[in-house]
Length: 107
Image 1 (cartoon, rainbow, N blue to C red):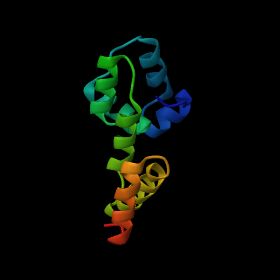
Image 2 (image 1 turned 45 degrees about the vertical axis):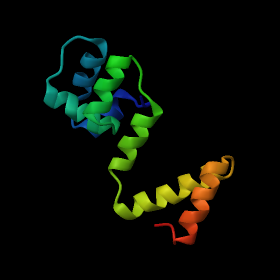
Image 3 (image 1 turned 180 degrees about the vertical axis):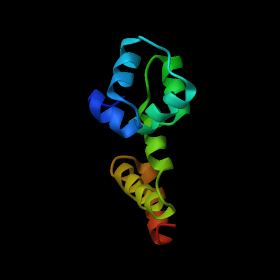
């Protein structure tokens, strides 16, 4: 999911480096509480982690949703304006939607 060292993940997850190493090697099965800590360290939701496990991979969309879920309403509006502008450049459907949004003040 993310290119982190075991040390950085351990610090972000409030776990020992040894615990992270043993989990990565498959030396023990972590509790749900430990998995939740790892998710916080990886900045992904439990749902995204388990969905990735089911699919054997993660999706960009799941990770983007996790990123946006932690943002304020103001940041979400800003991200929406940026995405609409980005896609409007190459897509006539989004271009008209972005123009309409801009005419309404981006709301």
